[in-house]
Image 1: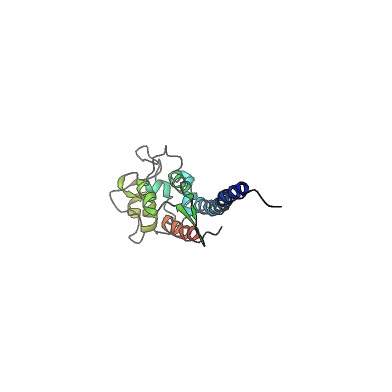
Image 2: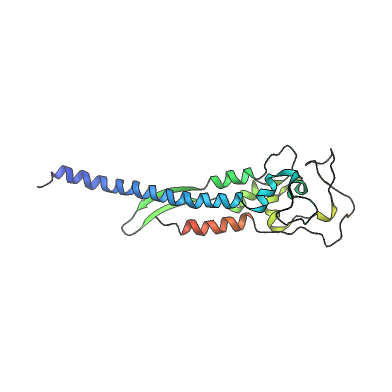
Length: 195
């Protein structure tokens, strides 16, 4: 049975759209799976966990030894519930956009924030030109002068900077991988995304 020429023409016109919709659906699903994994890794990072716990946290990140915790050392205002929320919001902005189907390939674009986006959004509470998220990776000075005390004059409520060194000179911040390593890792995963 021969198909009407109009039906054949309609099928030819609709096939790319149907194919495109299916590929886009699969692409978004693959992308979302990687994005969810990236955000889960961020939320389970020791720095993120420690900062979410506020001034009552232990230094599970290992950046400060027994001196204190990151929340009070960085000097977040005690009214800041979760300083990592801004980073999570930035990571949530990662997005998949379908582009086009070519003869032998499928092109799509992915928006992914970079470390600079995070660093720009995470200023030190006491030095707006510096990023605390970057400081986690490169180091934050002043640990030798940090005094863990409950004071009303303390931004976080638990710690002040002493004018004199209160710890031996070997006491220093131990920087660790955080945002840059996370974004680099997942950038590679997004580049290798398969549909």
